[in-house]
Length: 317
Image (cartoon, rainbow, N blue to C red; front, side, top):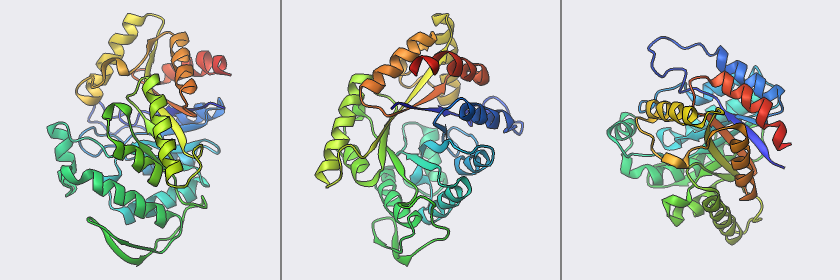
């Protein structure tokens, strides 16, 4: 059965303003999504390149205003963080939420000056982020699962370390590992199969995403797991308006403010009528996605959510 998630605008709350943001609209969106039967709510991540609310503390606040929805990051730049601190924070949020946390996580980019500086701001060399990312995931997986971790790597070394609390979820806080067909690197598919409870793609067309599903599940079987076990997730960006030109114009403006550029062109979208968006969601579902996360490329987040809940969710059953 298709599951739906909503990305909450933690970046949008601070774009274009130096004033302290109010978190109430974000909490209201989370509650509305839960009441409408949405399966999960998600928040993004960045420190200095694309400023926003910190994801795990934000999810802790949302946990106190919701009862059922899963709480996720889409995606967390895990290598910006120390694995022991990340494990304690994640296990704490999992405890607060009663076992609802899931960490979508990616290697992250270093494609412009702001992104490169973001890594350097926390003492991480941008060229080492992929190897550091893999070590962070392996260590955090063990620590949130209550294990005593001994680890020897290039970036971290531990001899019998553990943290409290452990996560409520018996196997620890699960990771969904970002991987994309257009990136073209086998390492990402192997990484997702080895270190993740599932995988997440953002930039693929539906036919490309189906190849990601096949590739990750093939490596999962190679590593001795059940091929159907990894959770397949896709993150899409939409703007809901019947006037397609107006939808595309607002989405382009929003994405330029969000990223400094519209980095993936028509790989975002669709921008237009609820019917078009519902059809694209169905295409990703048919390509193998079990969960679709929707972000609104709009300055009217609450209105977009209302349209989504009332005109798209019923049509998807």
